Amino acid sequence: MVPCRGCGHELHETAIVCPHCGAPQGTTMSGNVPIPDGVKGWSWGAFLLNWIWGPFNGTWIGMLSLVPYVGFVMMIVLGFKGREWAWKNKRWDSVEHFNRVQRLWSIWGVVMVLGSLVIGILAGIAMPAYQDYQQRHASGRVQVMSEPVARDAVPAA
Image (cartoon, rainbow, N blue to C red; front, side):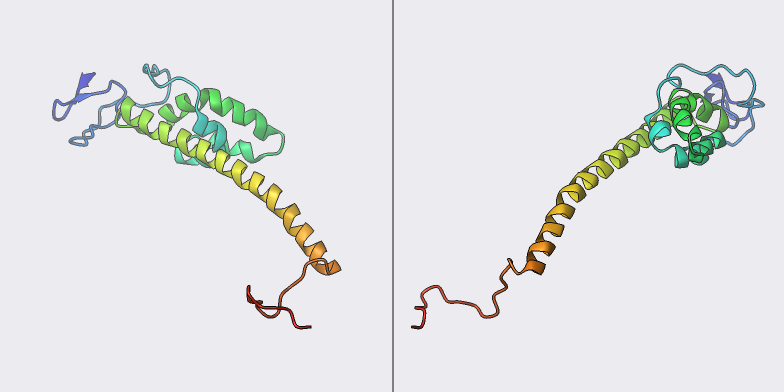
């Protein structure tokens, strides 16, 4: 932590501007800026939601995931390097802020993949059942009652 050049508040050493007073700190995120502890690691958000994670985190190389065949490789590369690239390419208030945002990306990535899986399984069960119903209805094996029948009614002779 270093003091702000404008107001003296404690800032992360890689902060570009002070979040309290807005004073520029004279540092940039490009070049050989060391990556602080807690930033490196696997990024589920970048791996699973790469096509939208990249632009929102200033990592435009993530758009290569939309290119056929290259996309699978980029998913893996973004999973490994995405957090570091996002740290360098976007302004973050602190490492805690960065980790909080990346954790949300990871949660949403897992939710989207699991949700798609559940919907796919339900569709895989429902569609054949519906097609079977349509075939039985077309062949006349499904009887449709036109008038309600009372339980205690005695059939007419």
